Image (tube, rainbow, N blue to C red):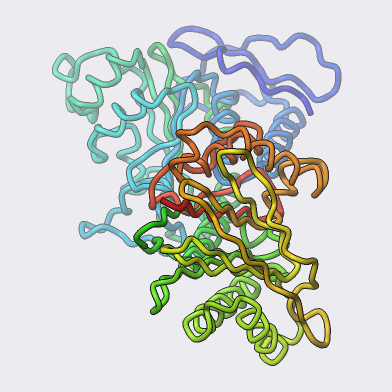
Length: 496
């Protein structure tokens, strides 16, 4: 793919601008004379084939964006290359399909999908973006777009509004921020979905370091590019909104907090791969039982998509019910769950590990169904609790496996996890489990004394330094944004 023109080249008042290179081996681009805004360029100064090729290459690059954030940065970078600007920012409405006009009839205030009023920047750091966000929207760089203007150009932001002859639309705050950031001019274009009379769902603004007027050709190319990019951005925003909604529903199927049980400290981490990527739907659960015991479980339902997540929620709810009825017998709990799964979800299979803990005696009873064995971390090291090999639930005509019982000491830590952690910790499941065990054994005394720190230590070590969630109940779930197809679940219990 051909490289885009350097964003460092810009058209200043009375200066010159570099032409765009042709797609085939071209001669060195020749400068063209600046053209006042609104003045058409002579036909001889245009190369329609080169312009079409440039727009095609930039749009093709946008279609290859990996997500919404990448697409927004791609639009800013491409616009800066077309206009010869060095910096820019892009703002979006929360929902391009359903945003509502303001009471005065103008379009709603812009903001990103993450937080209304925030911005995505190009060549601007977070403090610079924060300063630009303090500019009132009715006197900022995109003010005219809210009232239907096709574009907004401020060719000279260095002169104080009070020193200008005649009315000036530049507000005091915008001028102050521009002077502080070294902005000499700005050019803004709307992002609008196709349709007559549609309000802009966002805006892209580019900034120059000195007073400048982009040529009519540059303005035309940038406008054509933004028109094409608007359709793609609107689809990315909708796709991102649906993904966030689905992830929120999925998170709602998991515990939002862990129970407080005297004598046991709990911590959990859940890193979902995303409904559109996941090869299964994992869960964790901790339930204080009526007999003062504690039920712990992790598992995974095979499949993908929203249906799989819904099935996971049903199976987890059923397991909680069986735990309340016969929680001290893990084999009976999993046996009843298997019978329910075959009756209500005959096309699905699930893996599960269930543990019953007695906080007073520190007695543990466990049973597994196709799930990775848990880790018991003591002052002497870490070892797997070898639950006997058994098939996943729903795979055989009759599930059966013996339980395992053991007694823990004060300070010992039991770790339940799903297969995704082991698989992502090494090139194979066996290698990942070995690395997980080594990481648990190498945990410091301070990490072993705090389940939150212990989980963070394992994720840091096993996922190559990617700390997926710090301590605290508000970090029970985090996003796994690297294209993985396996969820990662950890549930740690420490005996005090």
